[in-house]
Length: 221
Image (spheres, rainbow, N blue to C red):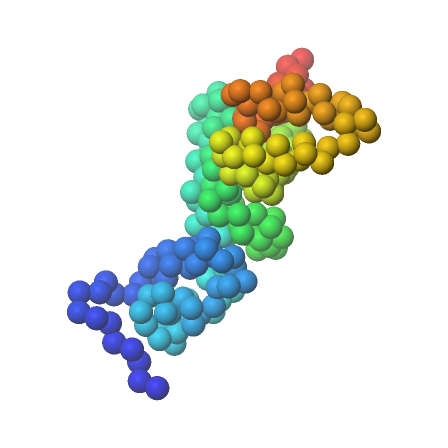
């Protein structure tokens, strides 16, 4: 089959364009739906022409995972640790919410890319420069990542995507609620979660401050 020619005016295929298209496909349908053929179609070329820029799908996935990590703001060494780690956690939450397919793959891969290594080095550099003993810095990274990953997974699993959608979902739950069997849960829903201004996504910052409080207590003699 002859190679598909690019239309006049179409930008040439580059590694960066291949990775941009791969991230978009993964965001739309997950990594399972990403293939070299679909990637070629998205770029308007035959899949074979992509091998001039990437050796295979595994290499594409590896590269786009690093691109996702690179979107997360890295903490500067000279920034106060609490401010830096708060900003980094919030940025990671935003990035993983945009690219939910990336979390499981990033934690599972055995050969992290350069961006991932530099990202963790920046986190360590900020903590160590701000007086964290090495063991406490290691604990802090594990704890903060666990909190961010868990919070994002919980938010992605919600049956609503915005505070405006909370009420209809809550009303549906309440319609079949066993009030006599779960009085404390009923109290939490009616007197807290269904009150004006409540948004489950606001829980992230509250919990993050609690985590940072705990680290600060461990750091302070």
